[in-house]
Image (cartoon, rainbow, N blue to C red; front, side, top):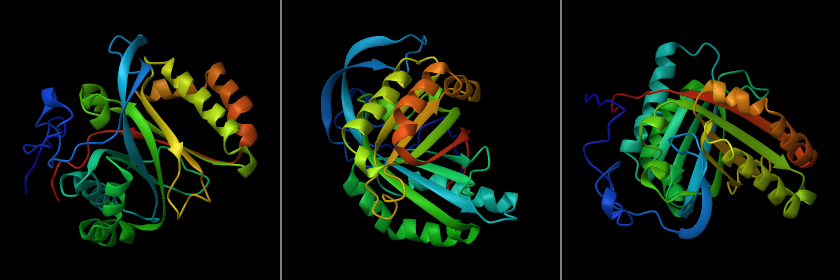
Amino acid sequence: MVVLPLSHPMPQALTFRSFPVYSNVYGRHGNGITGRKQFTVFSCANGNGQRERNPLRRREVVEHICLLKGNKGLSDDEEKDMLDYLYTSQYQLRGIVAISLGQISAQTKEDYTHAVFMRFQSKEILAKFYESPLYLQLMKEHVLPYCHGLINVDYESEVEDDVLHIFRKGEEYNYGVEFVLLIAFVEASIGGPVRDALISLQELTIEHPSLILQCTQGSNFNSNSSEEYTHGVVIRFRSLDALEIFLSSSRYKDVWESKLQPIAKKTLAIHFSVDPVGTEIM
């Protein structure tokens, strides 16, 4: 059994031809992420906590959210086994660009107990992930025995075309809080009203680089859950304090009450602490 510190990249690395300066870092395989776009954007993750306007390329990514309902009486060893196998799956399953997971910090109205976030290069690679024998074996042997329900939400989004932000690597991404918001918008609002609401939320997150490292959002294309939740949002906060400051701010409450809540028929918000787990390759 090999033990590896999570703060360091794997010995074998994924070469992305799109990033000649950063070749042979983070990962194993040689497929690049496709889909670059040129935008002028504001960077949330400015090291000085200040917003900077820069012409940056944007990279298309696919976000995967899995919420689990852990069995009652789940032991610490069983929980650790499940989370370790899920976390280290990134070293065995092709296409996982970034991953975070953990125990949900507060009880949810639907009894979800654990959350997993993964980032993929494309919808095609995510589809292969779902069909992978290794993934199916992982779920059968190390996840489903410990859970009595789950939901998967998948959506396309964009992030800065920068290695650290695509792969969520670097010291800033080692810790923090992952905030996941699932929304079912009323059918009549799909289109303009939803787009306006999500743009307002996105702009608000961009205005708080001292609190937020990254925010993605998009329309759920998972056929098994798209009727239950039409959209997903993932925001990586720098700390629990940052999350609480943002959610209690008057600006967020205004966006929520005036833009999101009036057109949402159902919502689910959860958060979990991002700490190093899965230090053993299972």
